[in-house]
Amino acid sequence: MSSNSLTITDNRTHRTYTLPIENGTVSATDFRKMRAGEDDFGLMVYDPGFVNTASCKSSITFVDGERGILEFRGYPIDVLAERCTFLEVAYLLLFGELPDAAELKLWAYEITHHSMLHETTIKFMEGFRYDAHPMSVVVSTVATLSAVYPDAKDVEDPANRLLQIKRLIAKMPTITAWSYRNSVGFPYVYPDNDLSYTVNFMNMLWKMVEPKYAANPTLARALDVLFILHADHEQNCSTNVMRAVGSSQADPYLAVSAAAGALSGSLHGGANEQVLKMLNVIGSTDNVANYLQKVKEGKARLAGFGHRVYENGDPRAEIMKSIAEQAFQVTGRNPRFDIALELERAALEDKYFVERKLYPNVDFYSGIIYEAMGFKPELFTVLFAIPRCVGWLAQWDEMQRSAEQKIARPRQIYTGERKRSFIPLEERAPAGARKG
Ligand code: CMC
Image 1 (cartoon, rainbow, N blue to C red):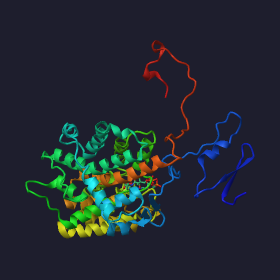
Image 2 (cartoon, rainbow, N blue to C red):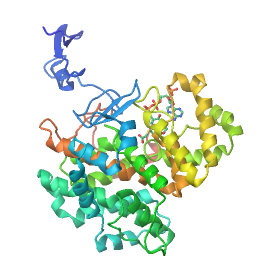
Image 3 (spheres, rainbow, N blue to C red):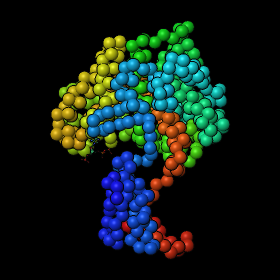
Image 4 (spheres, helix red, strand yellow):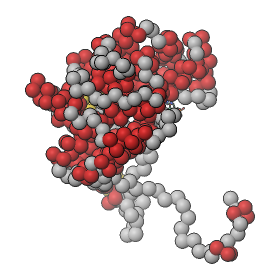
């Protein structure tokens, strides 16, 4: 018997089973052999929230939650954040290698030349009320691209997948910027092909009457680095949605729309907007202790704190802090930054947060930087969605290439009633008279 195996005795039958261990994992389907009797379905594993379940094999992003390590294709996140542009990292995530100069030039050219939206999509966007949340607009508008590009349904063709990937990466900033311009009643600014990915996004958001938009280079670089930090994070909630929807062979626009919907929640990407709201409620560093007390009493949650995977700190949060300092040199210090620093200091000295391994995550400082740069809080989560779209697509493409992947279809533990006698409508007791 291989020592790399697990031996289990089923005390119902006294049978012993040996399961191979591969990559520190046993196969869930091996448990099906463990049956109490002829009619028994076999054992299942129960894991709501996938706390300890690997759903795929992936070679894109490595996370070691205990040691606080994050790598894209083997490169540490801090090195990529310091040395690369966002489009370079996007290429790395999608193709597995950093591009050479010619590859990067071509890649940037191709992304740049897919950034326009079809005029019918613009009309669709104009149908939203002025106060529509940008995440709602992004989720819906990305889904409409499925109707604009019916060719995207051929998800088995790698070349076709790549075309849709380029379109999506290119159009996310345009959709986001135009959802903003719509909300403030400003005319849309069309993409400018002379500008980099990030600066063009800033151009589409903020250009007014000047003939050519010019971004502050420090802020443009800060935004580019923020995009790098958000580009992928292995099997998080929205990526899991991307894979689950994509596993049915739905087209990538519908899958990205669903993933963006998952990202919008306040426990996931929506947390960055919640952090700003929380810091506004706290109001000043003097109120931090009171707020932490409320959290400990279960009356509030600390937005931007805690992570399913990181147990000793999120490596992205530290990089965020240094970007904040750089951005504030241009924008002036955001007063909320001091509240955030005090909140972090006080929480990290408090047994309650230490015991629960609650540290600032990627969302804790990002909103403060975005606000200082001039973004409205409602835009914060779409600023997460733009770069994460790259991660979703890399993971989706990897899944389509995998021979092992099947349609995502978990099991359940049924806890409801069985074999009830049907009662005709006229004989049913009024709802108020039902027991329970
Ligand atoms: N504030 C207060 N208590 C918390 C927090 C928090 N932010 N996060 C976790 N806890 C407590 C939780 O109440 C529980 O305590 P107890 O053991 O007494 O019941 C314990 O810590 C374990 O928490 P959990 O909810 O079981 O942990 P989880 O892995 O299921 O949840 C999380 C992870 C990120 C959803 C959670 O930490 C959270 O809600 N954080 C705030 C929202 C947030 O910042 N989300 C962004 C995550 S990072 C970027 C991204 O993925 O988008």
